[in-house]
Length: 492
Image 1 (cartoon, helix red, strand yellow):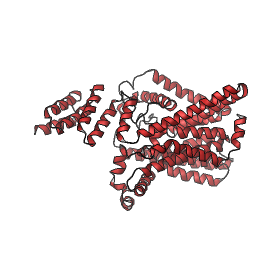
Image 2 (cartoon, helix red, strand yellow; image 1 turned 180 degrees about the vertical axis):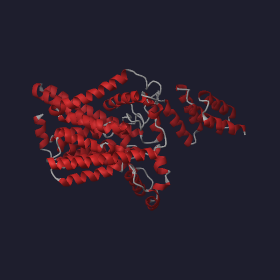
Image 3 (cartoon, one colour; image 1 turned 30 degrees about the horizontal axis):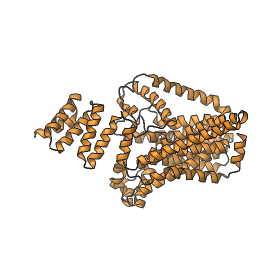
């Protein structure tokens, strides 16, 4: 460890930051040619309110948790003349800045260049981040993280000068108007003060604590008010009644840990989130998730003195994960973009554990074992980078996007419906019908898919087949209104 620190100490910080930026652009360069996908069509391409800057600011602009990101989208659309390249370029730039900030943050807190660089490098190449970087509609999480990490970094530096606290508050405000991660940011800073002693002088700590408590109240109330005012649709988590949603939330925690460490099968729709009946039952996954939560809390306290970086990484992960945990049910069960900020904590933990193992190997083991350890680390990082490059390719167009999701999760029947809808929009009715049938072969108890299939047959003039599909939808759900409406229209 000492030899590694000495060799890193000779490299200027700006050189290491340049290396990180180059790595990010290296693994994300093939995302720059990607198209607008899925929500991009509704939120950007077919959204007239963002396509006229003057009209946007006079008629549509308002202060809410997504206001800053929405404003960025307006300017990106103007700069790009309706092309996706500019959107992708700025998303990759935001991710590269985030990787650099992770390095600066860790170095400011632990004064350990190897730890800081390795943490930032793992975060930079981790495949779980592709949904927040390569998908334009997911990039809000990367921009929100940019302000979140900046606020934490300046807060850590504020023990040196009060001016840094002003910058921390400024970036907190920007984070507040970019996404809901700001709701837990003051809590993270309070925990940093309590457990990592970064508060500075006693009087100054009282000032900062008052600022943080005020920020915590403001952000919590503001985001909660906006969410309950704006959110008019029901997320998957609301399908579970009573305490069953808590079972789902615990099992989701275990699932996230699995895909963070082994991000092999990925996609927008994870079947885990759509097995409505199985997911709410008690199973080994529930007890694994519960044990993982308890172990994380115990390790946080145990590692505070001997391995503070591990402790800090656990704290970061748990706090950043909290808004997406669904212990207060407000969001989708599984979305990879939710892991963008928690991934920072994961990267710090992995980097700290490797360096701890390296310290032991370097002290007691042979040269061959040391080389094997470095080779294992190199293979680990390169495999993450290769998976990121592969995933970026899958974002190139809507067909590769859905087909990859199907290949990764053959039981994820919800994706077949989306692929059918994609072919329908393209005018390929035959393929749309084919994928509806494939979807129903996997799970026939889907009234909305039967109704979609009926609509397709109706457009083809196959009225008898359409009626049978609508009747099948009603046999599954006797009150399914779209099927009743379609049958009434046919009878006219």
